[in-house]
Length: 95
Length: 504
Image (tube, rainbow over all chains, first blue to last red; front, top):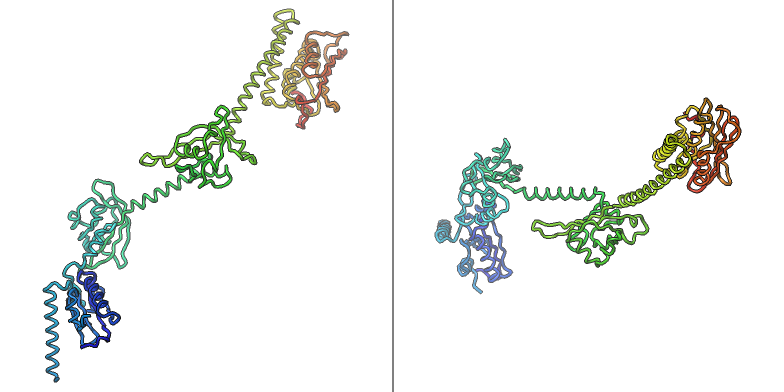
């Protein structure tokens, strides 16, 4: 288990303004503010602008959220509308 | 954990990610995927990704379209359909050049293969039967997948052109105002001045723009027959009237400008309402036409008519007097005709001289040349410059006529004699002494002939010229000395060049 005091380094891969991408950005912000206040860092990567960046995290479907830290790397695909699934996927204990 | 275990674990992770990805796509949790293209990864949207852009392009206020490199229209937005008056379906597949009317640029097909950064042209967009629309066309490169194409925007220039035309019209109107010789003002509906001609600014010696009309141009009625026409209104009411109602032809003066000549000037005040397209009054044009010169001309004309009337009556009285006295002193009808006719001609010559000099002063030399013209070879004149007033011309002409007639009948001019006419001025009192001296005529017998001619000379000299005449019938010829004052308006001494001359 990840110690709750450790910071979360997250990358969200989106594709411009597709509905799922827009929803994923909003949902991730909401979840982090609720469950990881002050303990997270989000980088949003628009693959429409630079598709080559998809190779770095071997992105196939968009949107995709990658948890870089704490290790191990975790991957959640989709618009993050199911908060419970996101919390489980990121190993975050619900508060 | 040994290496085969690690490899198996990595494989399991990969399989798990792959399964998760497939499930997410299958469940519709993603709307874009990354695929490998010829030039590396490409993003393929599954649905809705371009919706915001499509809406943006559809709602643009400019026309937008994409065109293949062959010049075929691939897509048009709603605005372009509105501009051309054709449905999008009718436009797609047409040649790009067919969108334009009139002289289509020769290189129009190159517009669909624009360089990076794009190109801009001006053209006329065809609109079916309607008048074509001036437009600005911008074309830039775009890739539709792997295929190059052109992205074109078309902007309506008619609004800008109309604004330019309005600006030109405004400048034109402004120049008219500036060049107008009348004071012209534009008022808003409240009577506030919004525009003023150069002449109007000169009238009040400052820019009146922004001020109420009555405040900038305080007016009083100039025509006594229209007294009170302006004064019965309060300033706000007058401003409102001038700003909204037609108003013509009231003679006015500027009040409170005693320090300059504008107070003495008379203006014709007129106002005409300005209407907008809905026929609503949006203000007025007020003109103040300077009619001072016209008023002065009218006054001068009135004075001239009165003067002419006076002079005609005067002449008629003179003619009547001459006729009466000629009848009284002539024995026969033939004698009357000759004498009366001669005297009328003398009167006529005097009037000709007066007309030539516009009833101003007459140089005595000029007068003498006219009167003595029948005998110009035989009369010598000599004297200092002397300008005679118009009132003295007729009496002196009559006197000289009588002397000339007398000389022609009995004196020097009846034979080969001649006449010397001299004059001198003397001071205190300022008088003129003119001497008529006949020489070389028939010898004059002793005594005198005191006919009507000599009586007329004495009477005219006495009553009309306030002077005297001395007639001396010497054996060598008549010597007549005429003395009359240089006084008041009758005579004025000036220095014209003429002094001594033979009449010829």
